[in-house]
Length: 395
Image (cartoon, helix red, strand yellow):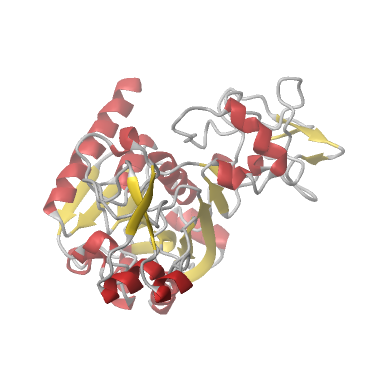
């Protein structure tokens, strides 16, 4: 495995690359929301960005690009207009989103110059307790005691309880592919691209894990005929990967009543399970096995059929990483493995703090990262180097 990091505008950097030299692109580009007033997030990368990415990608190479729910339509259109084929859109669903809603009642009182009476305290975060006074910590969102205030003017009383936005609970991941050269089979044989690593990303099957049992002639979680792959007759290699990913939170599991009781056996406080472990014995009844210790099979309404991964926690971010939008390593490993052949080259033209690169190293792939910010690139190098050394020490 090897990696190469470049400082600069991705359009200019990619112009120095050979055409058809990249196996996959997995990236978390700017959402164009001016998140935390960051300059790099003031616009969605347009068509010219993705045209250059298309040039360096091999025919059949896949592109996975994260987006924001308010702006991903512009991102998807730019990618398509650049010549990519839109193949799908994965939903990453989570329950830990921060509400960023303006309190209309407070805004009315502030405009009128009226002082609101403090009527209580709330121990939730400032974003959850949107009735309170906004106090920002170092990361922008602190935990503490927050003032609950009452409307001061008649107009404010009339609009008490009104806000301007919903709580974010999912992010789209656009799935695109560079047009094939010939058929899928011809393209794959020539370039090693074009397909997706289905068996490598199945949910509930890992090295040493007992194959999932078949019931009534079909695998749990599957409908109709299923290719059993290399497994023995009567077993399944795991659940077919879907275009939905979740974080195993209470909010998400509430959508799947059959798996809600399994929360008492959750894996860890981190709530993040790498895909090669998801569905194992420690996953709180998510493996789909027919045994007394695991009564939560995938009967059609179970969250077990989907890969699950929480947002990045402090440990996953790594020491000294101040980037505000870090993606979890387990999720990025799942993404790069899905669209990149072993030993392939993964490109992230909006590298940030290097989550894609870290994932690529752990999966035994090569990586190229590009970013405009020298500080983020230094963080990315440290994280990628650490992941590479850890993997080599285990080999």
